[in-house]
Amino acid sequence: MSGSLRLGLVTYQLAKDWDIETIIANCRETGWEAVELRTEHAHRVEPELDQEGRRRVRSLFDGSGVRLLSFGTICEFHSPDPAEVRRNIERAKAFVDLAADVGAIGVKVRPNGLATAHGVPEAVTLKQIGESLRECGDAAQSKGVQIWLEVHGKETSEPHRIRTIMEHCDHPAVGVTWNCNALDIKNGSIKESYDLLAPWIRVFHIQELWSPHYPWMELFETALSKGFQGYALAEIPASSDPVRLMRYYKALFEKMVELASRA
Image (cartoon, rainbow, N blue to C red; front, side):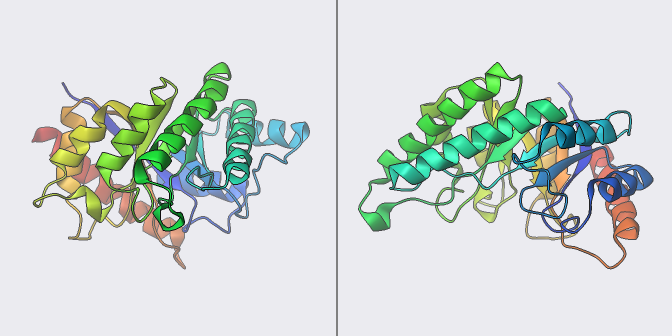
């Protein structure tokens, strides 16, 4: 079985100060195909956007050749405070409504640690996150949207913990954003970690492809061999010459994917 990988952009760093028109123009010029808009950045595509603003955002992307794929939220569900967890669940649901209105398919959320320092057992927090995700998944499914749990957090980025969360969640509209963390690597390979999460992986966040600290070729080879069809979204630092950087990054990405497809 073979899959495909397509290149997109996370606006967390490189594009944090760009408006929507600039994001689309730079992606079109360099051949990047999709974008995940990070919350609280200059593009200001947030749940507070009114219906006219939502129609405008959708119209800018429609026919542009650049897909508004997802929203990168900071919604998280690990707090020992039930009111804080509820606030984050409702915020995630608000992003689901926004995604449906503007034509995006994903809302990225995250775990951001455990609550053991507050006396809450790990197992309790992992179950709490999973159940919160299930509620968000119900809202997302009703709108034709997905929730994507980023492999994130000092303790919760351990793949076996993410798997436990996903098993508690057990919802078809909830998947995983693979984040290319050092904790993925076991005995020099990501295979064990990838296999733990493979049923749920919906998208990748990738970083500096020149870096020797992550087995990029193994990731691409594994994803393609397992039939992954979707986007790898680059989360890379800002540049004084972003279009030039994007051209080089795309060329490197495409060559690596080509080589991985032959493996």
